[in-house]
Length: 229
Image 1 (cartoon, rainbow, N blue to C red):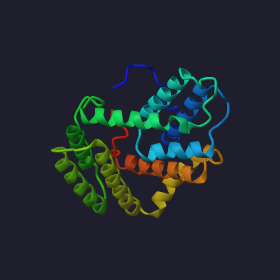
Image 2: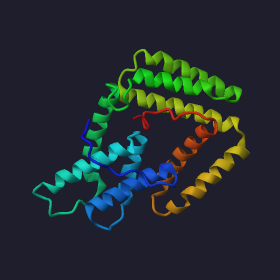
Image 3: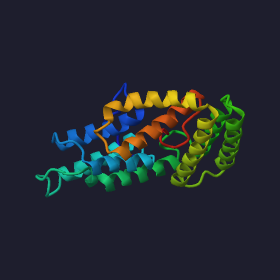
């Protein structure tokens, strides 16, 4: 694990999914020392990191490491022109994070215990019968995998697949009117970002935000390692 150097946190008070993008933008622009905003390609890169479930703190570690290295390089007089300059270091930070998770160093507990905790949280929620059936299958799978969690990266992919399946069921179980209410809340919160991000990036933010709210409505946990630690 890295040393205790201070890293910025997500902006408070906004949509948590949009805050992820905004925090990365603000940190990179500030560290670069240039008021230019992100390009469409930069936003797409942040989307790739979010889809890969890389936590904000891990992305910021990678950006910090890349820009620190640049500041001590022969090319330090040239400003970094794109967030893509930091991509390799973000991926390296992600690999270190996954290794720390596998060893229990990031969360203070092992992955098996984490999976048991997720299973318990799932089972505690009161759900419509169809969603409860999907939930029970997922909880049983997590308990089985807790005995041998395996690779953290592969586990995270599977958790996200389970989360998607559960959310798809919840969308249907709640009725169109209920879902429309959640969608209206999401769209209102994301309105300030329209025009700042490419449309397909904003669509990803909207999808993640809607899933988060669906799970929160039913007191269900997020099924990923994204929030671990």
